[in-house]
Every structure is written in structure tokens, then in C-alpha cells.
Image (tube, rainbow, N blue to C red; front, top):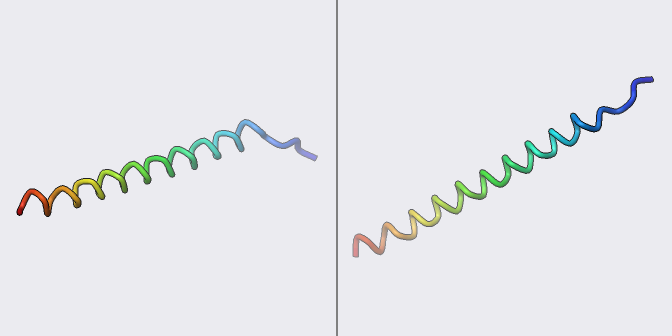
Length: 42
């Protein structure tokens, strides 16, 4: 029986975590830009 590859699992978890953080960052940036736009046009 093959032994589990913990390094691979850790790498996959890190990639998922980074992806989620990047999505949050993008969402935050887009939210800030959309919030600022109406105020600028007033």
C-alpha cells in the first residue's frame, strides 16, 4: 500500500488558501471602486 503524500496535500491546501485570499482581495477592491464611483459623480 502506498504511503500518503503529505507534502502534496499541504501544497494543495496552500494553493486553495491563496486562491481564496486572492478572491477576497479582488472582491474587496471591486467593492471599494464601486463604492467610490457614485461619490465621485455627485
